[in-house]
Length: 458
Ligand code: MN
Ligand code: MN
Image 1 (cartoon, rainbow, N blue to C red):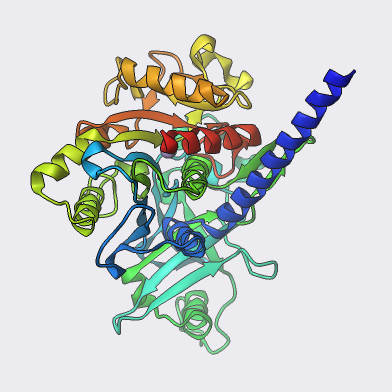
Image 2: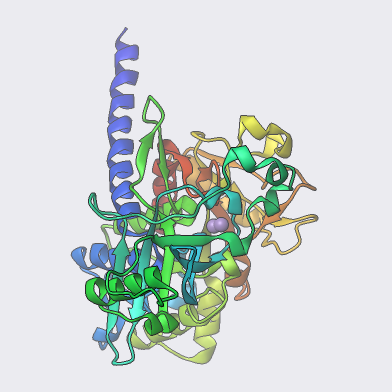
């Protein structure tokens, strides 16, 4: 009897900790629907915990908390450790970009009394999932005078929302015979933004609805049609992340891939209350969904450069020491795993699948068809991690991304491994990955935070 009560007490304690982190995570998801918004929120959370911009200091000592805001789209956070950087840092890294639709540079047009914005999707999406949903517009418009407008339309209770139409079932016989990848094609992802002609338009006006939208953009949002040329506007599902399931065991939200690991990484860093032995790094990167390209993608050198800057701040920089430091790092490449879905069991191999609720998942390798494009973590490194996680009772599982010949995917792991550091993929299992609304289990988020926290402490 006593024992039962003891278990119950433990469970309730754990449950309230799970609920607490889930609540904080949902708030992070709601605040960060684009990579820029995620950086802004991460900066806010970090500054509240004593982190300062790395370029605002002239030296760094153990215990110092520094961050680099890279172009507003990627971010690095550091807690300086006791040991020299040449002994390596403990890194947790995730990406904060998510699949979506981007507004094209010349987007606005009118067709038969409906005004549209033309889009080009970003990352791997099933296009048919993005129609008939309330959608929001987030991003920035950079004007020629140097001002940058922040745009967020569709999240507040009384905001309008936007969307893409689908063909009515009554006339869809031909459409339904098509393959799913062409049921809705990329050029059909046209966002409806208006349907009322400008009252001042005369009968000769060919695009009276577009005219009204142009006026509205100027008056309500402060930019002109031409300014779309230098804008980054992302079309994302409108609305908040919600508890999912009658038992509230899960969370449905936009952008779990990979903001769930990004958030777990941030919390893990914030959990380091003492001066760490080794420098702790949290790395939030952009452009993972399109190959980690560009100046804010992981293939750019901002991480390496920030390490060099940090070494210089500690008074211990040389090119050779930097190379040694990078090679000596240990890293968890934190990215979501494919959660086993009983509805689609045939694509998984059950012995090596990630199950929702069974803890944070480790992937020795990713890639596809013979591990192509994969990082393949060293057995010795995995053994060390097993030791660390077993000692702290972290609930973890291991998995591959589906059956051997079915498909695959990649992460940022192989890019960091280029420096010669130990890297393994690790993350939270997701259902409906890359869909507008993805699902995770709260327990897995909780275990991810625990795993990343003890990993940084090693
Ligand atoms: Mn991902
Ligand atoms: Mn992805």
